[in-house]
Image (cartoon, rainbow, N blue to C red; front, side, top):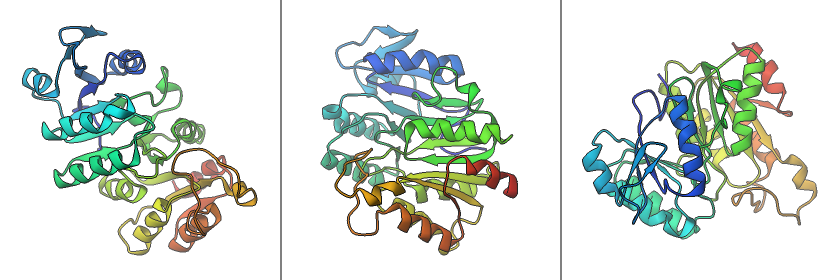
Length: 296
């Protein structure tokens, strides 16, 4: 098993003719991901790495009815309309790579997805990967096998680059990954830490989950509450980046969601809440290796 994506995932890429998407589609195809179609209005009839391009999601779905996932690479101003189009065509999972989507538009996307029982991962996600089965987006780069082995450790990360760094750390400890999910670091996330933990709780292949959190927001605290309430029972190893920023309160850092208001978004507060809930919180990223050795 895995969560969100597997060998049966069939992908539509919205914005496929753009620079970033057209660079990443060949990597996904090489990994074995089934990219069946792309959409760019006005460019129907073209191909990207052999993948047919359509003018609309409806046209792509008519020709490729097995599509169940959309990878969204459109510019920020077009992201809401692209997501709405995918939802209205009954696509089950949206992985939004686009950065800098207006918060109001993200809120509208998430409300519409919720009403239609559609899962959203992102915005600002670098993708989702189930090793040896499916790779969505740039996650893992062009040589994902160097960091990602198949295994029993789930990854949830706000940081794109640190998603793969965490996979590399896990590999160095002698373990592999069930699924890695980059949830993005915006103020609003379609899939939160708690949402992903619920999925990993049901995944028989996942024995331990590693979380990479950071300053700002309350999603880490929600994960702690999930554990406290008994709704996630597997071991959770957590690393929360950015504790040094508490000594530099006037500076700006990192992702759009890296905003501290009061104490709730402080890394030290998140770490305490997770420890109190029963998570294994490490102070340095490389200490994940030793903790996995204790648990597996």
